[in-house]
Amino acid sequence: MNWESPAAFFAMGGYGFYVWGSFGVCALLMIAEPILASRRRKDILRSLRRESLAETLEKQ
Amino acid sequence: MSNNKIIHWFKYGSPQSFYPLAGKMIPWFWVLATIFFVIGLYISFFLAPTDFQQGEGYRIIFIHVPAAWMSMFIYLVMAFWAGLGLALNTRLSSMMAQALAPTGAIMAFLSLWTGALWGKPMWGAWWVWDARLTSALILFFLYIGFIALQAAIDDARRADKAGAILALVGVVNVPIIYFSVKWWNTLHQGASVSLTKAPSMAAIMLWGMLIMALAFWMYSIAVALTRVRAIILEREAHTEWVKELPEVKQ
Image (tube, rainbow over the protein chains, first blue to last red):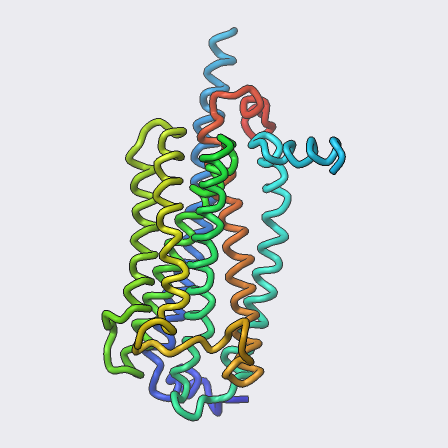
């Protein structure tokens, strides 16, 4: 085990800003990207459903 | 190869049959990505020892190198699909190229970002105009250019063709990035891992880096497949098969 305390873990031997700045931004982007990608699919599905509903209403 | 196999291959080359297949594959890639991330992060922070020169600051390597590898690898895959779409006029391969571009751009950005945060404490500079850093920045601009060019052309097929030419011309930059540390004197260090030499790092650090690279790889596949499904629906919106999809019909 490398760390004597949680504080030592967050301090990263004085490199805390650089290490957490790297891992933090990485985590942020890798959480945001899949959310945006699946939202893109949900958006197009919503408009496709609206179109299909409009078509069925027209036929009636 | 028998005729059967050829037909089978082309079957999954159509957006219509690839759409549900991708849907089935996505959860598996998320499972793999999660497993590799958990193991990789555990090694990165708890098993890998403190570096005798760089202290704890070197731990940035566990995301810097995987992001940089993926930024180059995704570019090659993107250019391959774009080129295939250009040569054979296959719709799905162009859609695949389009789906990969944002993920590649994010990887290129992360390699630059983590590199800057690593360079500052170790070299004393966020950025230097050496060959490795400059060619990596060009890779990021190539992704942005590819995305912007495709977005600027309304006709999807023409956008595919223009994008493919840009992607293919840009391929020349990938070996330049890779060999830049050999060809020129750079502030950036040489490769820690190469195909021809034994790796110049402790085994546990190497394992951490490789497992994190696998995690990034699985992540990239999962998110690109998610995006390609959205692109398929957008581009095939007018077709019968999309209208007949259970999630559209209801």
